[in-house]
Length: 315
Image 1: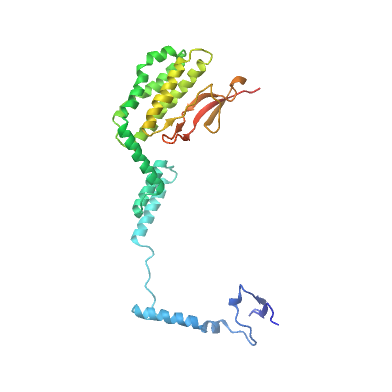
Image 2: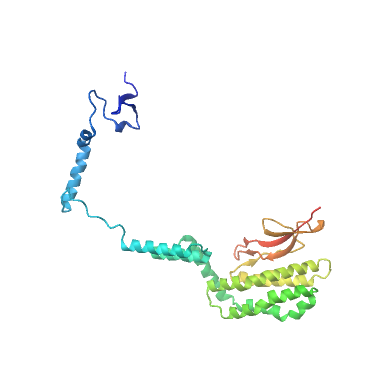
């Protein structure tokens, strides 16, 4: 009967067991003195002999004897050392600096161009979308946006008469009307590129729209107890219809429609920025638009929900 495990003595007289994991570490069991390490190293298996002959034949074909040492390889090529140096300099330069999304995209594009690769699928979709926006911009002139902003300047007297709050209208003049002049001048000199247009929207148009939405929210609060709602409807027409439709035609965005004191808070469509103590009748209602919400101009999907102030009744 053959036992499943074979026990033998190691040179230091410790009992060791041969199993599947360490079977190659032991020689076949035999009687007599154990072979020394030198004798073990001198013995060559047929497989090792074939490998040694193959190495000698390759060395002979390369023009050197088997005993010659192969030439030392350089540690790194000049191009590799240059890349390592450039990477170290870039890391030191960007350490502690937070890159913007546009800078990160530009860095990825530069790395891909150095490697000889094309644009990624996401970058290809972005470029295609920019081309579509450029085509729409060429059809729909930016002069309409400028004319819509100029309407607010031309109707200053009308807005002053409709607004019963002097302090509120002074804030409206400073934060909305005061920005329109610079925005229109920049728009006239704007290059016909998508990046320049999006930068203008971020720096000039969105601050005007956000402050206008805050002014509209305060008007909704002041007209809550009044019967005449015509002025509120004028502001809604300009914000949610006129300027929103033109931005959608240009391929920028579409403004999310939010109605303070008439619409309740919904976590799916609104982003809560602050809570205000109110009466029970206004519990969980939208009180103010702090920042407008934007939607996709093609699919009308919500891209960025509006930031709002919510009323809470505390008993």
